[in-house]
Image (cartoon, rainbow, N blue to C red; front, top):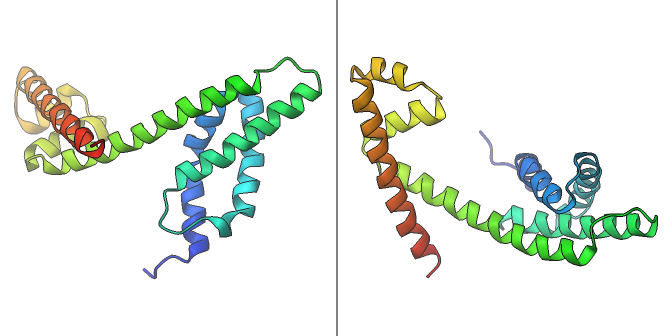
Length: 175
């Protein structure tokens, strides 16, 4: 498979980020219809500014910054139309909080991925089947030829180990 061009890489990042950008905008506006409108405007601006995006940089913070400006413009325009919407200053405060949480979520996701990779193969298989394959405990017990209680205990121990690993990883990221 040939390497992606910068345009293909940008389109992939934009496409993969749609749900997160939508969630970010919705957290600031609180209305699905208006969020969809602002997301469309935001996508247009992102596409127009694609050449300004540094390949290899983190796409989400850059997209959130543009989305924030689009939300502020939307609120400003609607306030001018005399619609009773959220105050732009409140939206700014919310934007700071949501961006911080989005960054933390990404760090957690990276830590979880790394910690899952450190699990022994049989534990990784249990996690994969249960959480990614959405297999029920009963089916998992049958597949692994273990009792339901044994599977529950194994998953509980794995979750505890993952929590400890993630906490350690997060401390290292934040220091």
